[in-house]
Amino acid sequence: MHQDENRIDHRRATIISTITAVHFLLSVVLLFLVAGASMSRFDGEGPSDLTALLLKNAFEIWRFPLATAFELLEIRNTGVWGWFVYLANSVLWGWAGWRAIRFWRSRHVGALGNL
Image (cartoon, rainbow, N blue to C red; front, top):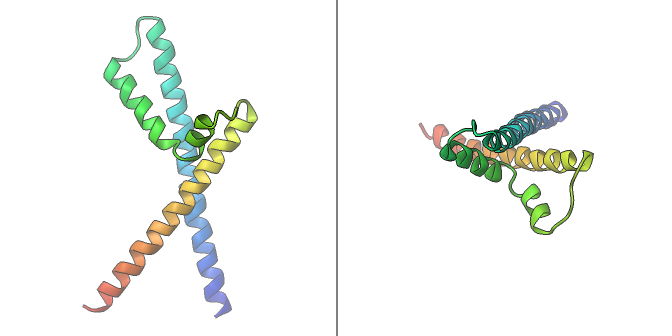
């Protein structure tokens, strides 16, 4: 039984860390795309308004809930501390993703067992 618990803990850690890493990487990419779209519009050669709007809205959704809460509470998260907020936000999404996968598996394992 002890090996089963270790395997489950390892699987949980792998899922959470994978989702966290992907979320954080995409957060950084979206941040730079939004910043690039904003800066290039000043030069007159930027993306269309629709592209910039889609990037901005995707970034707003992606940084929810932790980074958005910090902004709404007017807590400054500049410099290195800002990256910790985005990393913590990604860990939160990793945990939520693991819970969603666990819920989905528990619902479908029971349904598949009845076949």
